[in-house]
Length: 203
Image (cartoon, rainbow, N blue to C red):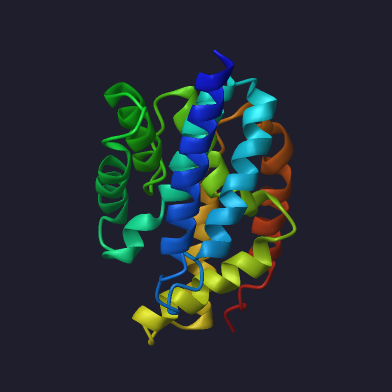
């Protein structure tokens, strides 16, 4: 049993190494959907998984989903979740992960698609991990990265456009896990109120 556990761990580490290396090839224009973002989501997954009491195998699946959740940007920003699922299936098809487990990983990746619609506990964890920053002091840093990325593809986007986009998104968003609701939601609300206060008043 111990040898099987070690073999599975090494298999995970191999896939982790390979996808992290590939994510280094993301185009510089992806200032938000970057290797840094993926690494942050993996850390958030670990924290949320501990709070939710998942099994070690479930944590492994969660971390793989986190590692691959934005890998589709290597192919295209359009429907990148679907592209990411294809990459997962290619990467894991000859591994010790079962078709059911690969399906779980793809389900988690698809649950990050906006608007988020997770259906299982693991999908809820990854969905919250993907937008974990909304309820932290890192909001300004990562939102700036997102603004720079969006403006690259839409140079006409103004600061006011961005403020309105943020307000609409934060008002529509909600966390799914207990940790997200109890610990991230209050700070997210603070961030929302601060952004609303920056809206220029009409003369």
